[in-house]
Length: 170
Image (cartoon, rainbow, N blue to C red; front, side, top):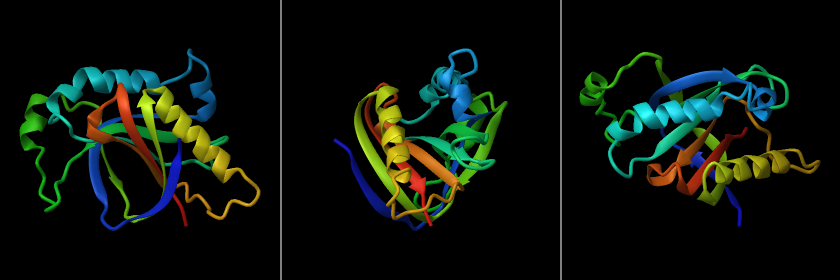
């Protein structure tokens, strides 16, 4: 069952993680797909350093054009500031190999949220399919910004659980 709702993100979210540049076209073929390997590397090298139950983010940004043709960056990451805005990462930075780790900010703004529950990665693919379907209907009342979109894996579960897909809208 899919629910979608508009959510106003009042504060930006600072994140860090591993990044790749890809296209939706590249992701169709196993030979050229990069996202599976990105998440695998993230899982192997970084998940053990996060607090248990911490949300994990998949952040899509630097869109070349729209989702059909252009390239974009994907960051598999974690939030680097707590509610008070204080960085909590210094102890993690020293234990992690910070090669290839990038910083990215999810901007405050309006997002349309698609939530799905189940086994990953099918669940997250279902959320994206519903989002694409929604935005490609002729009478769609929202316009994607193609600035930043993100997946939030609730409680950091990358195997089974809930993912909220946030699509930036005008």
